[in-house]
Length: 167
Image (cartoon, rainbow, N blue to C red):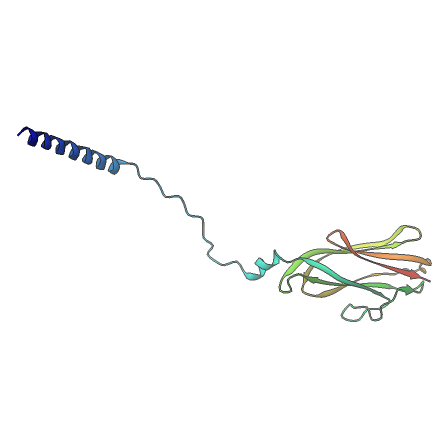
C-alpha cells in the first residue's frame, strides 16, 4: 500500500504543480498589441510619385535675332549687328515626360572683351516634357563691337554656354 500511497502523493503533487502553472499563466497581465502604422485611405496620385523622381534638363541653346510663336529661333546665328535684339532660345525637358519639375532657369550675358555682365535674368518655371524658353537682350544704343557669351543656368549651375560676336 505504501507504493500506492506514494504514487497518489506524487500524482497529487504533479496535479498541484500543473494547476499552479495554469493559474500563473492565466493571471499573467495581457500585453497590449503594438499599434499598427496608419494606412493611407487614398493612394498617392501617380503624378506626385513620378515628380519626385524626375529631373529637369537643358537640351540645347540657339542664338538669333528673331523667334517664332513657339519661342524657337527662326535662323540661328553667331554674329549680330550692333542694333540687334539678341535671343537665346533654351530647349528644356524632363527625365520623365509625364512629370513636371519646378526649376530655376537663368541666362547671364557677358561682354567677354571687357569681362562685364551685360544682363542677368532668372525665371522660376515648372518644366513638363519638352519646351522652349527664350531670353533676350537689347539696348537703345548700339552694342559695343566685340565678343560676348551667354551662360544658361539650371537651378544655379551653368549647363550650356554660347559665344557670339557683335560686328
